Image 1 (cartoon, rainbow over the protein chains, first blue to last red):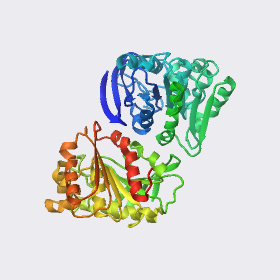
Image 2: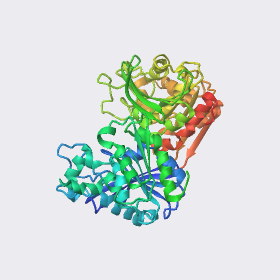
Image 3: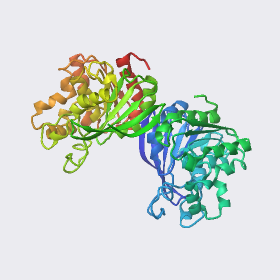
Image 4: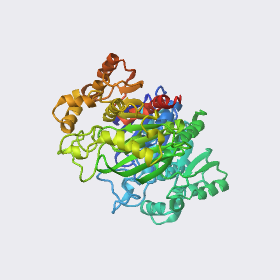
Length: 287
Length: 287
């Protein structure tokens, strides 16, 4: 693993790492914020999954999360949203919602995507192993009970789905404006058709609304949704997840926030609440 | 004036305005953050001047200043760093430290710069008048005692110089890694030669170290300087300003911060202190 950059921030360090990924068969980058004076072996970790078009940069430069993370002693990990590189296929028309920057946190089964687009395997297997083994971050080990996951939009979908599919790895979860029912909205239909094929039954394995009834989470899920979000009705539809949680007995706090849109200005406004929410579930901290 | 974007943030609004500038003879943009529930006529204002290569975007997306501004009820104004547009001359080689993105907050007297590069006039005359008359921000009026100025690097130079040259307009001042002695370092020598001509005596009107002995400020100046800043020895040299302030009896707090560099990660780490410092000088608030 190579450190591409290292900036002191809030007395801790914001770094970018580069490494050869076995899961994605290309080089991958991720951001890592380590607060001051934390014990790497035991400090809680929050994985942040970004949305469409983002890289490992957006969250670490725009969300303002490091301030509260430093206070809470919580490590932040911000991976990229897809594999990248000359060998990695992209959408033929370089669409923003398929291919590069649009991995959707699934393991693709369809050509030409299946060779590199294995983001579930990357986020839920390879990255935690790297964090634990290469960087000594003990909470990245399955069963530690001290790693949570959060994200925005496509990354909110990723956070919910990966929490449900790996509840012993990601104990807590929260999301901003998540795609909660990708099998029923245009973004998800396009991506899942390409990555997972035409059989819609197989898509349900990556749909938070479908999973909430099947896998039992012990987490209390926090979702923030801006009511001035341009994608609210067409792509997000949080009421579907609200209904699914109610039917499944899944604890959920869904906050509908007047006037907020889909941007990082929205995320920055409420990121502290999400860090505190996850920290509380991971360590009992009240921040 | 046209509103190009408007995002709700921390219950207030982060907007970008576009307007035809008389001073710069081109369209100019600036960012404006208005906290929730403030009285536009009386709320304190902080003008932020950005550094080389920046636009009106960098501060509003990367510094994380709006959170504390919302708490303090302080309006933030973030102008661009130079005129821009097809008619505006740039450095022949598009150098990052001259021309577009490098206005240095002076009124150029030399061709071809003198037609558009009038950033002092823009920041200290046109912009405050617009804020007061078009947006009803009463504290932008000279003598209100409720407008301060701050900035980073080239913008830290701008903040110090414009405070000294317009002490009744900008009552308080603070800076991150400012160019305190532009007449003595490569960035300043290059820009001042182009904008102000070969006569170095004329440069002193825009050199904080020269001005501190001539104009009397009633402000207590706050400067933060990272000790891992790559430009510390070559371009910044804060000890020169420290000496000049000591000789002139100018109150200064210069904090040398171990491990911090020249980036917005550094600014984000200490921006709250700067907002509180200026708010205290403008309103007596203790944040």
